[in-house]
View 1 (tube, helix red, strand yellow):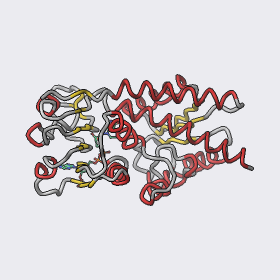
View 2 (cartoon, rainbow, N blue to C red; view 1 turned 90 degrees about the vertical axis):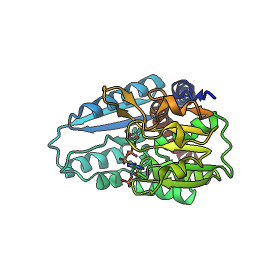
View 3 (cartoon, rainbow, N blue to C red; view 1 turned 180 degrees about the vertical axis):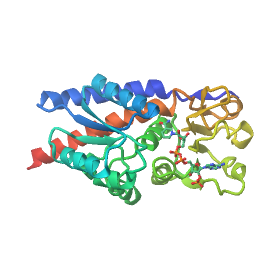
Length: 288
Ligand code: NDP
């Protein structure tokens, strides 16, 4: 068997085109959506991510601003800037690029962002909304994974879904979304006793670990849909996922490549959340 490729780059492109249409509508009504991005310090990875986000916004017709603060920024100073942006009517979404320098507590920072502008979906209010099935912003990566699964025609109701990884930004919200879609969900982590026993039962397998090629073909159920969130460098410095693509693609029915799978979807879903934030604001002001 040779798996079909779940092409995140192509799907992301069509999502971005849809966002651009929604943005144009808002702009025609007098207010294009706005995203405020804050980068503290000059971590090379973060700098590249932020550059991508700003460029994506530009292409989708979303106004974006970038605050570049020095690595020595005091927490109070960052919180004060976030409060200003919370009050700024031209700003629909606020994104603080993580990780932050050691003197700043990321939890406090995220909690200071208004939940109405939490387009990363990391605020406790957003996590609580997801947990209880209320409307809120979904974290971009698991949101993108759900769109990929829909694109592959995955039948999630009653399916065995296994998520490897339990971080607050990927694994846990991913598991919750799969549960909402009526899958039977197992979450694995570093203390899971026999990982392969679980992964081999999965009709849908999502790997979000951060270990190069740790999921091999023999750990995958024939015909499974495999989504690889991992972004790692192998021994030769090449970008690769958590899944060993070569052996896994001989067993799975669908598989995401790395790069070109989940990564572009994560970027696209930030735009979706931002336009959504602007639409919600417009609806609430129309209703007043
Ligand atoms: P974290 O480091 O926060 O979480 C990793 C998880 O993997 C933890 O829950 C950990 O378990 C678990 N884990 C570690 N080792 C094992 C093991 N041997 N067996 C089973 N589980 C294990 O990472 P993130 O969730 O932030 O990211 C995961 C990966 O996804 C990374 O490669 C990251 O770069 C990538 N990523 C990609 C994105 C994209 O857009 N493509 C977006 C976000 C992340 P425990 O909790 O017990 O420590």
